[in-house]
Length: 432
Image (cartoon, rainbow, N blue to C red; front, side):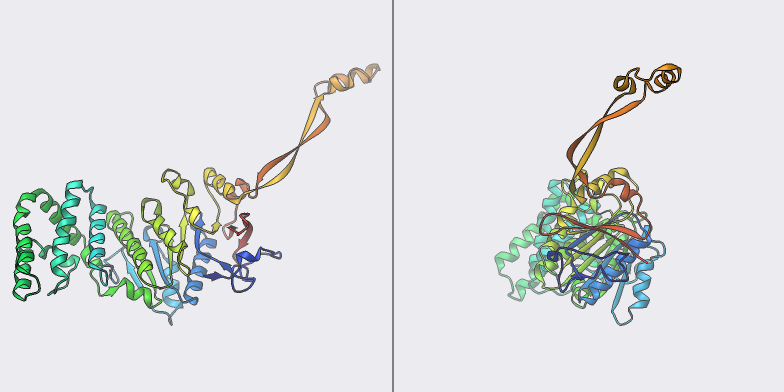
């Protein structure tokens, strides 16, 4: 996607000269892959997010905006696109407040194998799975899906997942065998497996408890809607998903993990341009977010823009999200450690550091002033330092020092752009 960063609307004074390797479609557009937006909510950050979403839609991308609703009480960004883009199909799923505006079915249109992946991912989000339980669930779902995909009679969803139990395996195996869709050997093997489930009471109970918990917390309703992810993605919708990380932490985390897993799957199987925007989401707790960044980075036309209030939180995760981004918008930093990290990202330049050498007045001049006045002058100045020379040293200096990040105005951002030369291009942008 190309983003016109240097329009008169945004630019705050001065002419711009930049390496053309950063441009696409003319000298006013930057080629964005993934973009990290650092700093807490501000006027400038809100303006940037609006422009990134609008630019993505104008470029023909489907856009998914995933927000932490607990940090956005008014949600002006979503409200603006609801009212200001009437010619663009708008879809919203609000996980905060009263229920959900519209559910998205992340399972619909997926392969049987991928449905199993999503169910295991969902289950592991809710509870710590032992090796035995995970192995059991994998085998159980495999047995169910092998029969289900032959000639399904009813829809498989989280709403009716408990219907697909051992008794269903037996009845379905007999039904398919009666229709000559599976042979006697396959029928007998399935029935034997179902009868042996009594040997796994602990694992069966844990699986059933998980299914009941998902249904009790309305997660089944959330993921059993008629609208499939692929429909939203292929129709160039702008979709807002608002999560609640205070009163619905598990559900929100689970939904986010499932969404990212589905997004990666769709990128690998469908040739569709998609933009992902994450606002005020703690993505450091989502292991698969790294895979999404990598997938967008290697898929032209796909972009991931995400806010990050503190880059330091990634220090213990074994990876740095900056590695997978080519542009950084750094708004005011409130923690010196973060400001120092962004100074490192800005790179360095060679600076001539001059150091003066000094000696005391007495060492340099001694008692050369004579008489009463001269003696008094010597007495007054004897401990003062006198410059006796200057030494020069070439040192590395940050392109942007930490205090510049700490002192940015609310409407301003430092922009750091990777270039093909390895030397970052840096500028400051102020929104009107």
